[in-house]
Length: 147
Ligand code: AMP
Image 1 (cartoon, protein in one colour):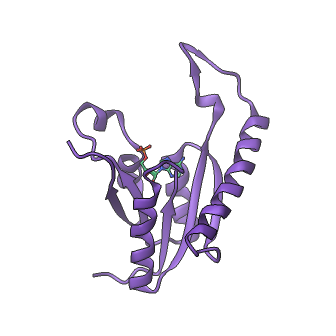
Image 2 (cartoon, rainbow, N blue to C red):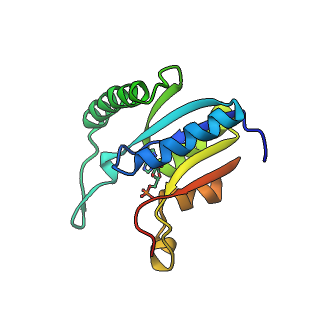
């Protein structure tokens, strides 16, 4: 197995997060690797009310990012990894995860995957998008019910 030195753990704060976190912590321990955490606040401007795009609300994005900083800090504390670098970005999750992985020189991204296929895969999930663009290895942790 390759020795990983810097692992980027992607966190969406869903109920499934624990499985992804557990796997990343295990990989970090086995490899003696540094760990960084990332959560991406999705642009509110990318949300839609039916066919009508909502106007961009930068203030809302900023407030959501502030909340995410607190949640990420709490999560790191709960898992005994307060020393891990904690990053909150605003944007499209798969793009920001790939950009930050490049920026910090991560050599492994740990991400949850629902194991979607067929049409759902074509439409794209975060894990699928990251897998195709990542500058490094990606560990896709199978979460939820398997089909
Ligand atoms: P999804 O394909 O959106 O269901 O998400 C699958 C996995 O992608 C999650 O388990 C997380 O590891 C990661 N992920 C999804 N959304 C975000 C986000 N906003 N910030 C960071 N990681 C995310």
